[in-house]
Image 1 (cartoon, rainbow, N blue to C red):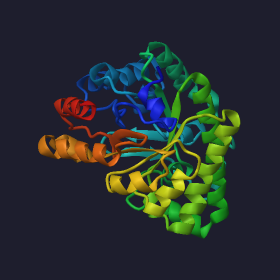
Image 2 (cartoon, rainbow, N blue to C red):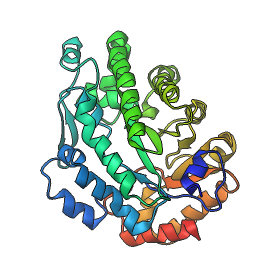
Image 3 (tube, rainbow, N blue to C red):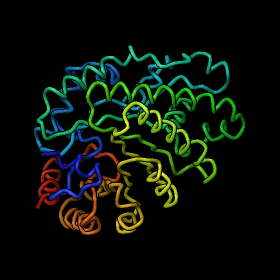
Length: 340
């Protein structure tokens, strides 16, 4: 029997809503923290297949989610272009910023897929070790989102460095985006070859771009990636996540040829369920803080999402990644509520 997650991605309505969580392998689990403490750097953690496999499997063992997502990070792509990438405890990612043409010359013109070989090995091992009814998800960051980190050298509240470059030197910024389109497409194709059942493209900074700029720097590059994936494998399952995007941007993402559109916490699931074509699954969008709170907030939040998506392809998830201080007992209750 086809797994429920894949049924939803294929435009079918499963007998039970499939469930997985963004960042489901993470710091809220004690077994994750114990393993992470053994490795000095986060990138080394991502690039060590036996460790990446283990942390991917941890939440599947605990909660029997309907999908596993490979443990990695969106910034392995700039790392594979030769940009210096690091993660400082409590400060987030730190990259050598690309602020001008000389900065662009410091990185390679094409992505080094050999550098990412450990990620593909992780996928191959997971496909052997995951239960047959648990699909494996791969992912990458959308070019706009990844470019914001490459230009600023870190995360910022409004992504002003990337926006300023896009306005002030669009030719230079387009060169960065073009490299990311080509590199991300090649990266996802290798993930598919290694065995992932679906991929998600994370557009974490959709909200900071005005309409025409969103079309130019977010939608069009993502459209090119999807076209490249479908040229390689026409029936590939693709999910898009335009986090904090406007309603028109969500509908535009849904029209790119994705199988599912992920929704953040601020989106009204009743609106999305009626506005997004029924051929495209909706995914989301419980507030991670409601999961931390538990109790009535959790019960009500789950019930509202289930009611809003009844009778159409839908996947239960959070509106963003699970947070570090989430009680494990609340995740157990979430699974019970979604499946009851």
